[in-house]
Amino acid sequence: MNWKAFFAMLARDAHVARRNAMVLMFQTFLQPLMFVFIFGRVMVRSGYMPEAYKSLLLPGIMAISMVFTGVWAVAMPLIAEFQFTREIEDRLLAPMEIPWVAIEKVLAGTLQALLAGVVVIPLAWLILRPIQFDLHAPLSLVAVTVLVAIFSACGGLALGCSVNQNHIGLMFSMVLTPMIFFGCTYYPWSALKTFPILQKVVLMNPLVYASEGLRGTLVPQFPHLPLIGVLVGLIVFDTMLLSAGLRQFQKKAVS
Image (tube, rainbow, N blue to C red; front, side, top):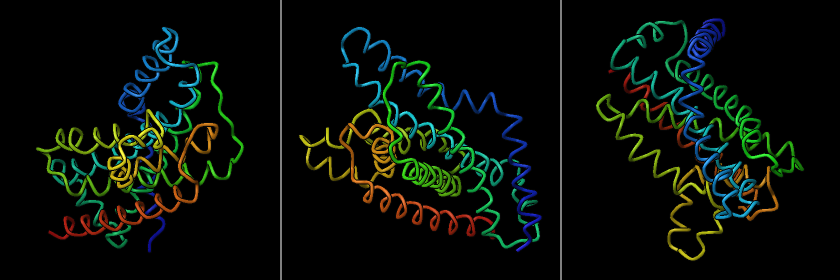
């Protein structure tokens, strides 16, 4: 393994991300922050939502921002490089095994997702203040946040290597949008208890574990899934998506 080539590609992706920082910021934060403003500010001040809903909303918004950032940072460049610019051919000539090219993409997406998660907390706090969150278990919060970031980047790898250029819009409407609305981002998983079948079905959605894990570590006063279940779920989905993504990447790279 040529680590010099690996980190050179990572530095290049970091440079591209910095150059497109403003565009990336609008793509990542505009929709979540609009939801924060409407549901957390307008609806609460109007009396249609309780004051506590602002705190309940924060972990879900953080999860959405991280997932959108990681998926976008990995999937969209891959779609472009495989199907438009053919830049991937230059990367595949680097002195490293093919899977490591994909892993570099995942690492770059993970770092961007982590940055999005860190940034969204003060942004949401500025809009929603006063807001109550409790950092009672910082190590658990770090573990969940890292696993969510890896999930988003691995999901971007799997989608970027599977979706045709003509189906990008379909990817967002048929995959990401249902994932968000049934990902317990705007409500806790326990709120689905009146829909028992749906409550069990949504457990196949990895975003549920992201939202519930962040909720349990940021605002533990609200109902949430047990932390051990969240960690196991995220590890399973991270492993599955990474394996699927690497397999698809290898197939596209040698075809």
